[in-house]
Image (tube, rainbow, N blue to C red; front, side):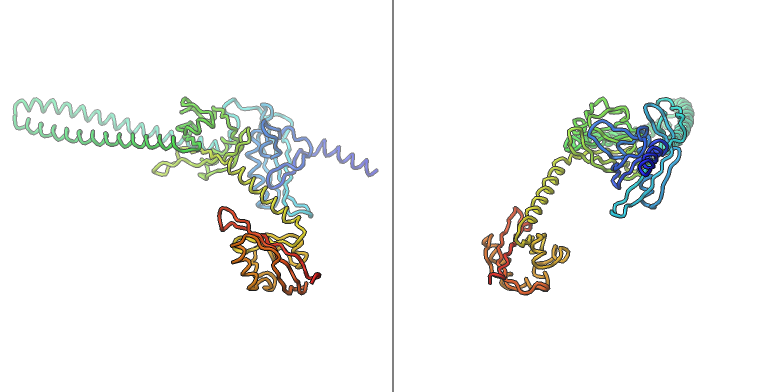
Length: 460
């Protein structure tokens, strides 16, 4: 009967329990529960079990803050009426995130449950209006307010312009009257000439200022053009409507842009490099004014750092965003190679049967193998990172060993069968034969010292 009950429970869970997944703190899916096809899908490109990458359109942006809130408050977080798209349909569902831990692990896990509010499909909005969220609505309202203020300012300028036209017409009439008076009075003519000369001087000064300003603008434009041509990374500038304003030659190569793309909305372009959630990230930067940065990989596995920051004018106004792509592929491979070398070194040290210490150039213990800990009955936390002369009760701090490590070894690189005798806590008196080798690198401060020891107590 026990097996029958388990099978019945499994059927009930699969048929009636809401679909969901279990994820870790890195958003990696560890287990699928129930039907998740309406909410999750595998996208094109490299295989991934990351929840945010598998979430369907409209769902990923809701999951990240919901999981973050559940993790921060350490309690269930829920969101009702979340809208998402599935095969062209707009669905409404409730999302719950339940944080939990297992007794055998300190890592936190999250149970994410998806529950459709009803079996009916919410009618999709017309093309061009789907997927708008509160952030977009606030931005649209703000843009409408700015447009209204601009219209009001333009209306005021037009009224002032009409008033100026009326003043000019009145001035013209007065000038005609003045011409008639000038014909009768030479003195008034001389006065008018002086006023005209003064006006001409002001116009000349204004023309010179405008000419100098144009030269400055041309110089700034040339500087910007040369700067863009000289930088070896991708930069794309977007205005507040997400239209491309400028981009560097490197961006033209990496993102397959053409000069004709200037002025086009970035939402209409399909880049050769996959930029996940680019539009959502730009919207967040425009809303929060915080810089967003993350590492991405192209289809060939090349690594980049994507950084999005607000575009600030000289008067501290936000007028779009600046998107940069930094090539970190060489750095990534270098770090991976360094990690492999470190793991190899640790494995070699661990396999040596004789007690072995690895010291840095300043004689601090970087690592020790299990034979060392077993022989001297010490723990790693009492050994690693400590000055060799301060290990134990100072048994290693003897003049002969100091001379070996500080004078003889730097001059000869290797030393063999150095006699060493000391009494160690919990072990007793030990007679050792020390073998040392200095591993020199290009930088002297990075030199390592391998100090192996042979227990000769029994032989003595």
